[in-house]
Image 1 (cartoon, helix red, strand yellow):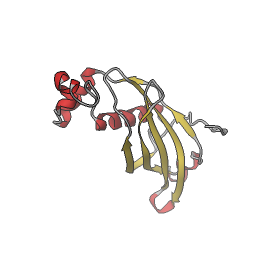
Image 2: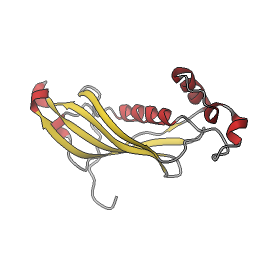
Image 3: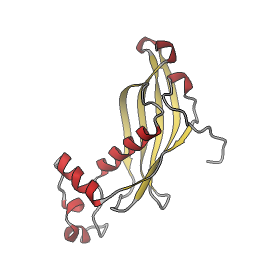
Length: 158
């Protein structure tokens, strides 16, 4: 990150407050066995790579891994904890997401984000903000990454 970056620290940011290169880092969160078990119950995904220790020992990972979508879900929660679009997000429009590595029970993950693009959409009362997002573990390894596209309210449309 060898360049100067602004850090997004304010809450309830409007479309006009976002600038390309704005950067954010979330608090961390440790993934627990309870998280994995609860997610299996909610999603119905009881794949043994997530839920069977003996089976997982025979996998390429050697132990259970968290569901990839659990990682994405936690990433959205980590972003929400920052509060930057808490009262101004109008819609989550889409994402392009890659699963780069496993998340193990006991891994502590956090989110890094940067504003990649913006586009005003006055007819919708705001604009599109595209965030380049990485989910990073305690070893500074990117385990998931991609882009999130969000419609954010304009200050003018309050």
